[in-house]
Length: 205
Ligand SMILES: C[S@@+](CC[C@H](N)C(=O)[O-])C[C@H]1O[C@@H](n2cnc3c(N)ncnc32)[C@H](O)[C@@H]1O
Image (cartoon, rainbow, N blue to C red):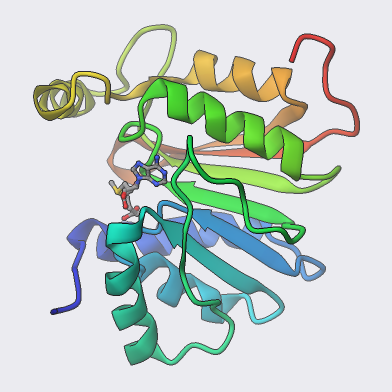
């Protein structure tokens, strides 16, 4: 098997790294990545955060490719990738300071998106951060014609996929005990949403 390659990862990794550097602290020890895909993000980002162990995860079919990237990179602070299929699996049983996921909300069905947010609420403790990269809609509007076309294309292959509403994500995060600490405009009409876990889960969750 050849290494899987995502050109998008090569394009977006620098801008994403800059934002991660603003929100990952020296005291953070473990970062869980959901939907690691090829593994390119993990092998590029992890060396920039030597204080952290990076935990890549994805559905089982992706793990081999991630291992190929890791083997080539030889990065010491990446754990072996494990299966984490949102909707079926729990997080690994360790405490995470940061959960990062890129370009997954529009692939996962909204039911799975809500499962992920619930898991974040259950498993993260006060001060931990959840960081989401990808395209979102605001007040029902796409942020660009290209995102609208992308959404249409996604729905051709899977009608339950599609660009999520920021308000839906944000409301679910608030219900599950998070506050939005930043919403950063990224190149190519993407966003980075950074949430911090509050002490108490709201009654409504
Ligand atoms: C568009 S790719 C993004 C991959 C990578 N994060 C990136 O930015 O290049 C979406 C990823 O989400 C994963 N995925 C889809 N459904 C998932 C689920 N229910 N649980 C975990 N990962 C899922 C896919 O296997 C795929 O690797």
